[in-house]
Image 1 (cartoon, one colour):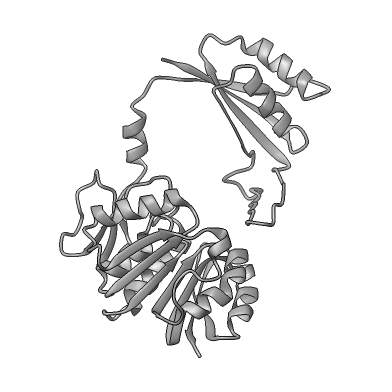
Image 2: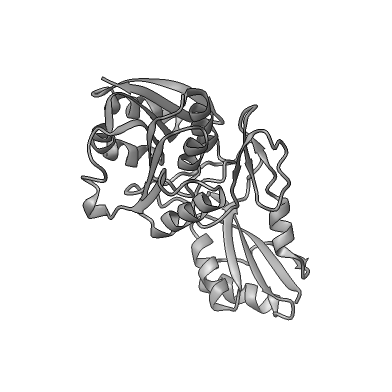
Amino acid sequence: MPWISLTMETDSAHAEALGDAMLELGALSTDIHDAAAGTEREQFLFDEPGESMGAIWSASELTALFDADADIISIVNAAAQAAQLSSLPSYRLEDVKEQDWVRITQSQFDPIRISSRLWIVPSWHQVPDPAAVNLILDPGMAFGTGSHPSTKLCLTWLDENLQGGEDVLDYGCGSGILAIAASKLGASHVVGIDIDPQAVAASRKNAIINQCDETKANFFTVHVERQAKPVRGGWADVVVANILANPLIMLAPILMRATREGGRIALSGILMEQAEEVKQVYRQWFTMHIAGEQEGWALLTGTRK
């Protein structure tokens, strides 16, 4: 079944109202994005839990998908009126043909080489190096496919620093990629924790796909009201947490208690401009430093005092 894509230029004051109007007028989906994406004028907007910016790009584009027989002219007029625009916005149309969306999506994900011995491989790809440590991982409901710089930073650190036999905690495990990598790199026991039950389910599924021993890899959900005591204190040789700066600051006492004396911690999901603030919080208990940077994201590591 063919569709038609309508993309119109707008601004931050009217983008959401236009999107809501489009849905009311029969749009199958809508998307608001930066009109300057991919240029020097691109705006990077980041929200963190508990700190919503509520911002939309000053120069925005709204894309709405309709059935091919939709009356686009009437829809644009009605949407402009609903959004209280003084004039009709400019727009462009594009035919969207029936396609094999599964195959197209899969084609966007190739194996990712983390190091000379560590790869992330989607299940539909042939393993590039059978002798390497290969993490079989498909894009899914939970964060962590290995493509994000913060995940790459953590994986590289684990690859370079795990000696084998460690107890590892992955706090905010998402897809389970860091915990699974730790297990396959020689950790004796790994625990993955997340507040999202879907993330925990994805982690367990990925652990099975990667043939992680159930006695070595455990994943469970921690409810917000129970976060004060996620695991017994001081048991982890290595703690990794790839979340965001604000949650990492709030979780600092919890992650400290989980780390044994002399144990190591690795934190990511932190923008470079946030790194100093996070480092100062953790320096109460750890000898912290910036261990890596990639595309504006920082990796902080330290040793428990």
